[in-house]
Image 1 (tube, one colour):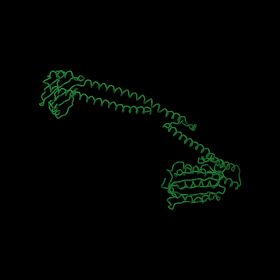
Image 2 (cartoon, rainbow, N blue to C red):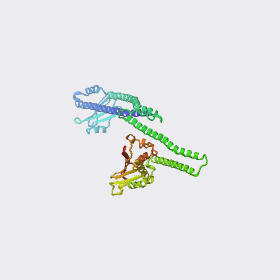
Image 3 (spheres, rainbow, N blue to C red):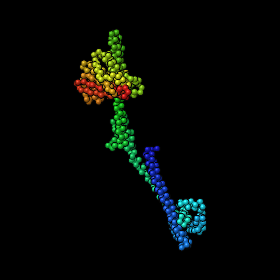
Image 4 (cartoon, rainbow, N blue to C red):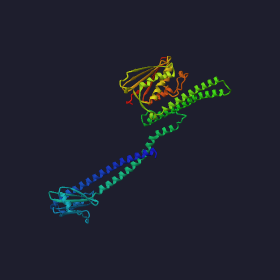
Length: 458
């Protein structure tokens, strides 16, 4: 079922319930009012009959009969009966001579208790009234012809209003649902026109602060993420294919040349050594890509434990020396807590070490003195790590892109690398629910700031 029809039916049902309730209330009120009016009318006639019978010696029964025949013109089939204290009928009037109404002694006895009794006898309504002064019980019964007609007429009107209201609600609901869902159709048509070739197209959100504007902005955000993912994928294919094909081409060429003729052992050794360097480069690239793929998902598949952050940092000096004997790391620990729990981070030790090592190796690589300064400070909630170098710095216009996969700054493209180190770092820090920021001044150096939550505060 289409949403438009669902909205229309729901609106129609709501209107039906409201109109039905209103019509039922009007009918109930009118029916109750009619019953009260006929009771008051019959009671009034009973009082009149009682007063006249009190003076029957003066007025005579014939005059009372004539009075009854001309009174209460709005009702039909009247019956007026009066009984003495012994339940003997002392007066009787009917519009039709053959008409009569039998009443039991119990009902007469109840009326003498001071109650005005209202009951129905067929289509007629009746009242029994007791006059304590003259000890006369009067029964008045009649058919409320005009009241019934008015109530029936009101019923027809209410049914007409209900049917007309439902039809109007259905038509207006369909019309308004069509207008209401028009922006959705427009958004759907625009989304259908977007393909991988025109991901730059965005939906017009407008200025209205409504749900359709929110939907458009949400879809635009989704398209931004998709475009970014496609761009990363495109860049990955381009860079990875180039980086992979270069050593493979070099290996293939060297082996092909070496096999063209017999060579000396020393020449073969040189070729093998060159091929070995290319294979190491290829292996390192493959390993880097695998690491990036590992942390591009979520932390669900990683082994997470409590890690002492100072122990991770203390591994860096020896690790940097292994990478290059000229690399130096200077550690400074400030404001460390007495309780070792304040130094604990919940995460994966190797991934966290890899992330910090990447930053430190870059700091050593780009510093003229090959020195990286690491500072650790701890608060009650946050572990803060800064890595500072005195290199040439990063231009401000390139800072926003350095965490993009395979992106390399203009002045660093001559340096060996793949452009996935900092994106890898960024992803690992985010997996540990931390933050990474960068501050750089061209010609003076760069500082990376890492913040990780203390275990138990994540």
